[in-house]
Image 1 (cartoon, rainbow, N blue to C red):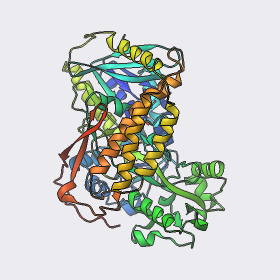
Image 2: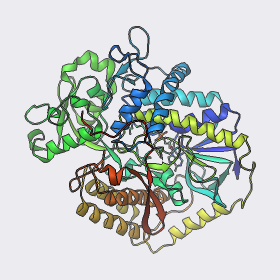
Image 3: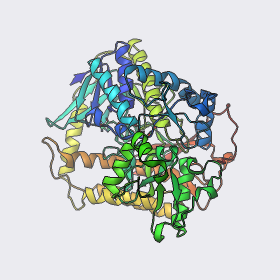
Image 4: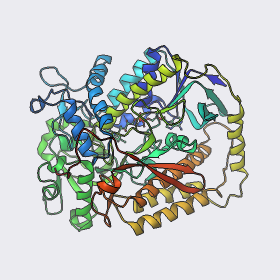
Length: 568
Ligand SMILES: Cc1cc2nc3c(=O)[nH]c(=O)nc-3n(C[C@H](O)[C@H](O)[C@H](O)COP(=O)(O)OP(=O)(O)OC[C@H]3O[C@@H](n4cnc5c(N)ncnc54)[C@H](O)[C@@H]3O)c2cc1C
């Protein structure tokens, strides 16, 4: 058994920021991460991070209230309004803090941090480091964590929470490099494990974005909030679904159909290519479905040619490389074939603005959490922001609880029992009959999610999809583990992970089927209007074992902005 006062699961931006805050408050903190923190998915973020710095010549009267309004309108009014304002207010000092830590943001000629326009934003307020913003932010925080000698357990796969008497006491983790399970106990646990994009077959997310942390909390009895809201990014490469950042359109890129028409004029006449993602993704899908894809095929063009080689080299160098290497197209000379793809998990572990969940000792932050600031549709640039703002707040809250002796310090409870239970469970997986293949189940699940819970949804399609997920869950019970112990046992990791993924998928599916309206990313062809009277509320999915989740609802925090029709 290993003890630290605070255990942070996940070394992405949210986990690092939480750990740094707690460490600075005097807490003994450890980060556990499946990969080296510097390889977390945060490092793939390209376009930028929002804060109303008012540095852009067209944005000098920008402020946190306007940023909060754009966020709430973008969310189709499902975001909690005071939480959104908290985020946009904390945004400004959070960016300057990163700057002071050494994050190499791009700059205007006068030396101030540069900002570019992004979708759904009233002002150009997205700060960026070329098109490698996530990489720059992540490496800055990794450096800060090393500087503070924060203990890191790298290549440890966390598989269970330890819960005793309704209190979270730690986690059980598998050492990928040494083999074997270990208990990590502490006074508080912060889950910061990122999104669940890999539940879909077509996603921009990294292979490790499986929703594992959300599933652990869910299995332990903490509800998942608003899971039916899944973001599809408008522009991913046609053949690989690798992201082409929104920065491409922020810098002036066009979307074109087979007739060379800038079709966004029909869907968002004012904002054009800079409409929010839900609207833009639906527009692209509609063009494709109605036969106006390029040469009748299932893609349209993202055209950057008119920006010129120099601007692409300065602002979007990584994007150009990705298009050349993964699509065989050089954006300086050719338009890029793109389609929408799964990108972001708006829902997640239900938390308050300090990352606290309904379970004492358990907090969550980053993409795995749902505060909720993104509601039914997240604005580009707001999730990098969420990680640093709510990561910091969760670190502060955990430190306050620990140092204020909210919970008993030091190891207690039934030490060793949780790790032994996981070992017994793994042995059981290996001794099953084994008529099914977990890898086949996983592939089918991701296809079900793509085909049945995609950009456009309807009752019959979703019902059929939900039935398929239930059947897949039953099939997984007949999948046998081929190897149990040892090092780098990916067979074991992937199988345990898949159980969580299927439950996360079921939470998405169940919430979506019941919500008879269209709001943000949840677009139903059979209920095509937003219905504030019945559905201006958050969905809570509660885990029910073999049955689909029990759904509950909570009110949305309002009071700052009246819901309006969303026009752009
Ligand atoms: C391609 C791409 C581009 C993006 N671009 C932008 C952008 O420009 N602007 C923006 O605002 N947002 C962007 N986003 C979204 C944003 O990057 C993410 O929401 C955010 O970085 C998530 O950070 P996180 O700290 O919550 O999780 P992550 O960075 O995903 O980190 C998760 C961590 O958890 C660990 N982990 C997971 N499961 C386990 C486990 N079982 N055991 C141990 N460790 C585990 C991983 O090892 C990792 O360290 C982008 C996302 C993608 C995919």
